[in-house]
Length: 360
Ligand SMILES: NC(=O)c1ccc[n+]([C@@H]2O[C@H](COP(=O)([O-])OP(=O)(O)OC[C@H]3O[C@@H](n4cnc5c(N)ncnc54)[C@H](OP(=O)(O)O)[C@@H]3O)[C@@H](O)[C@H]2O)c1
Image 1 (cartoon, protein in one colour):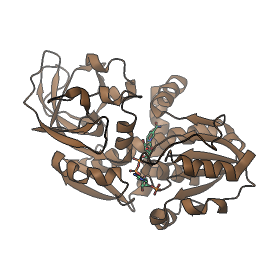
Image 2 (cartoon, helix red, strand yellow):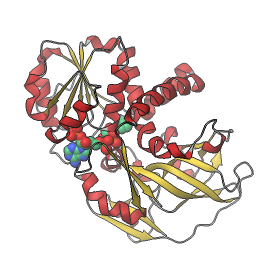
Image 3 (spheres, protein in one colour):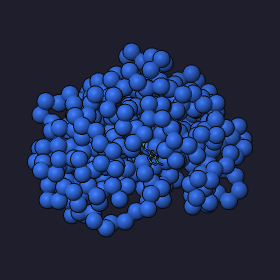
């Protein structure tokens, strides 16, 4: 058995570490990881590993553990040993796992469809990441949709939250929404949501030359431009920017081009994580960080968990079904398969219509 680790100081460096079988205590279960998705979102977890405590979810095994981190992934696992009365062997769970063969969970707050991992080291981490779904108890659960769920549901849940943030702020008075890194799955989830909303402003996609054709083919964006053609965006319209890239050269050029019509920028992602970063030319007063887990927690309080689940599930089902037309799932063979493509994910070389799923 092995686990995939990343050097915390040099994210391009990885290693596979041999692990031994874990034992469980009373109240715990041993979950065997079955499969998980891997996208730019996971690279962002590594980039923000220290700042947002992503390294703390799954402590690494092996030598010099202080130098190495485990990037969390979204996936499915099966309970193979249980000392917990409510969760029997054979239970299938969806949630946050290490890219590894197994994970010991300490289930708490167990309902028929959910539980949380009450492991001590996770107690102070964002609760959304500690929640697991007991999928066999979900009406209509179908293994055939596992890949879509891992690859899209989590990201489109963020798209839902961004849509809600825009809508509840009356679009910040904007007449157009510019989405940077428009080919990412989180962006396409938002673009589909906005395209289906009659009240929403125009949607403009900004992307790289190589992904421009793909983004145009989605039919969700009213206009598509490349990073080289920022000045073609209509600067006379009040604009809100949803930035998935953290490419400050692009952002600063766009802020400069839009001037006072840049009404609000939401800093959501870091797909261009390896570009130099600077605050020059960025309107920081109108730029705000977006962190989906906090928004989800707030909306669950506002609406109640059931209503939040109803609204977000409806959105995600709609947007992910649209992605079905183009999403090509590519299965990789275990953590070695992940190690083989990891550099390409870091470098943004994975085709935008591809979704990587690691099968353990
Ligand atoms: N704040 C939050 O709460 C939150 C929640 C969920 C996701 N996110 C963030 O949203 C972003 C998108 O995640 P995703 O999983 O949806 O992405 P994805 O589908 O894997 O996105 C792939 C796209 O990202 C761009 N890209 C990736 N790596 C690149 C590189 N090294 N250099 C240049 N471009 C690169 C390319 O798009 P272009 O050519 O179009 O630029 C590429 O087509 C991530 O940063 C993620 O962390 C944030």
